[in-house]
Length: 195
Image 1 (cartoon, rainbow, N blue to C red):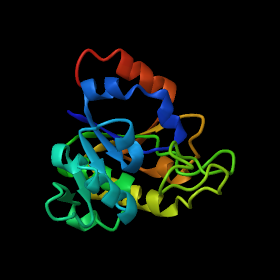
Image 2: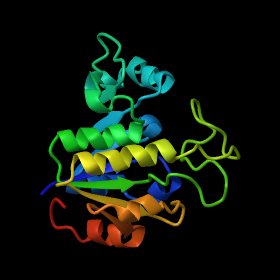
Image 3: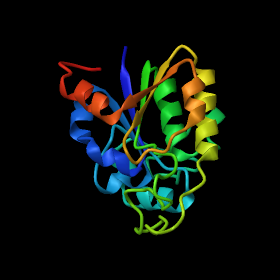
Image 4: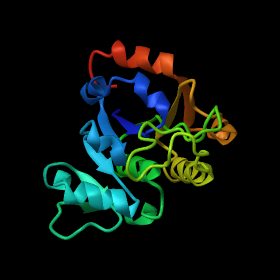
């Protein structure tokens, strides 16, 4: 059994000490995360931020996947079957292909509880403004559902904080469980080794 933590950039993620996750599993992150933290693997599918990451030299030193790697940047391709997916689902696909048995979706709030754009990096370069309406989550949801079907033998966990939108489709998936942020943090904080 091995845990992979897939970090979205929804505001619920702020409750998590990312350094503790590094000690108990493999951390996959997306997009602007690289500005603050270096996960085991970073993914960006949108060209402007993917190019920023590659031009910064990040991919020369750290594992980074994108749709169209710049030659010589050190960036790697995404999994071919899922390269049309968004960053978060692509990060999950990489974790699955790497062989992880437990996939924890953290900070994938998939919408909003207050009608505004829910993202830690709102208002920064390549992101919408804080008061903008949320991005439609339907594609992300469908992509995650596809992964749960393609990898039926793996266990998916959606970690929900107060900022996480309710996603009824997730309650119907046999290999997905919903975990409150409090329960997840308790699990991480009491772990004596890898989850």
